[in-house]
Amino acid sequence: MATFATSEQLLVIIDPAARQADGESVRIAKDVLSAGAAAKVCLPDGPEEFARALRRRGARRPVVVGDGRALARAVTVLHRARELAGCALSVVPVGDTGLAESLGVPGSAVAAARAVLDGAERRLDLLVDDSDGVVLSALGIPPEPVRVAVAEPVAVASGRPWYRSLVRTLAPRPPRLPAVPAPGPSRFRVEVDGETVVDLGQPVEAVAVTPGTRGLAEVEIRPLSVGAEATPVRASGRTVTVVGADFRYRADAAVSGPVRRRTWRVAEEAWGLVLPSR
Image (cartoon, rainbow, N blue to C red; front, side, top):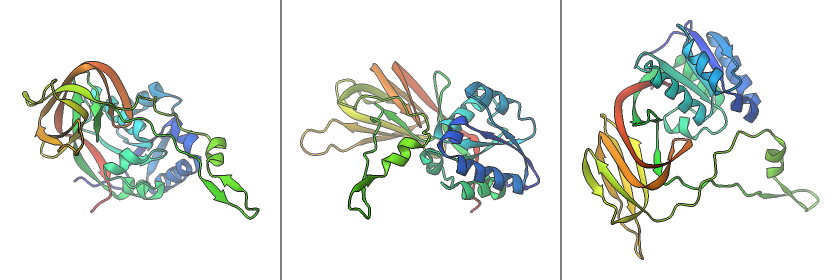
């Protein structure tokens, strides 16, 4: 793992959705990073400016302040520019922190910003599909339905219930993922390294693929269960192909499709993420 000196120059790219979702966490991240390193702050207005700033970073080490979609966007830009191999990426998660935390990044702005300054680069595997899309952490077919939070009543002195959701209603919100239908039984042919694991004759509930270790993807297929729960089918390999009738899939924080065929291959240690030093 490569470590970094705090005198190194940083390019801090703050995603617009992060500024809307949690301006206080963004301010904290900027303060910590600017106090510990020579940081140039960039405030792009949209994805195109975000990508342009990343491509024009020069010798500065890029730091993304944003949610999982912003992190995935940064990796995609660097991958398509064929610059992932020589770039150590950092992230301070603001908004939805699930993807970053699954990769080992602290969920709080302070801890994540300190990891940017004092952490070390770790090389991670990446799933790359046949349309040049990437998967950092998790792939799900079909995508799970979007869950809508229900307001929770809170007792107050008057005895009347109040609702926590009012604050979220009044506060700026990050953009929601597109709604997808609830998953049901599907028929797929799943091939791992050219070998058929499940064919179209076997209905399944879901297929999950994650980058594993040593250049292998971990595949889990849940067959349709009738009565007793069916045992998942598991396999691992360097390439995974899924064939089915117009299916959608969730790659990290984004929903893609519909497609009838998609192949993912593992790019071993393709990208570097700065994580807290062990």
